[in-house]
Image (cartoon, rainbow, N blue to C red; front, side, top):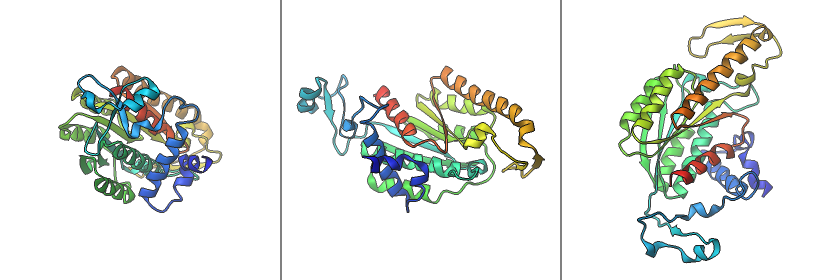
Length: 298
């Protein structure tokens, strides 16, 4: 069990040789972890069953599962697709940042996206992938086959952060392209004007989609805990500033707290699930949020 759980740690997963292996081992570690606190009560039945819903054919009820659990479950079939999910990944320049021992934000987000895609296809769901920086670079619509999963994982394997960001505008473009409602999962540091980003996120909701926002930061971006003089360079404008971090740490922390609180509050008010992650956070946090959401919308 401990062997499987270690693959929830970002620094371990980073040492693996390819994206398919990373995705599989993260998901296996996650499923193992479902049996342990704080996930007690979940089981791995989600890979083969879903709860009976009014309108389902009674002949598909799994009576053995009913005998064990006293609940009605529908046995799923290979061709059944339950949910369309859209993974939307920020690959702008700021996502290339790392403070040292941690993964770059883009790598961390791509590993989460790969694990989510793997988990979704295992559940007979359809999954698509969008990659953006200042424009939409890649748009792959949702499908539910193992072969298509390989294509998605290949795109994530080759991911390189691009240029400037235009999160709000890019998300609007994606919202317009989505024809079938489903679950939208955005992975980004959200380093853009929160008003524009929230308007775009509300666009997804207006079209009937469920939305999860996974905001990915480096630990230092949250704490600003530099311990020596430093040159700070804007990754997109290349502008530089030399200063003693201690002189601006308090102001920075207050501005960051306000920035994050804005997203948290606005998402809550618009029925959008918001999760703050940093690149030291084990991967099960993101997968658990997804699975919890999926159980609520089914």
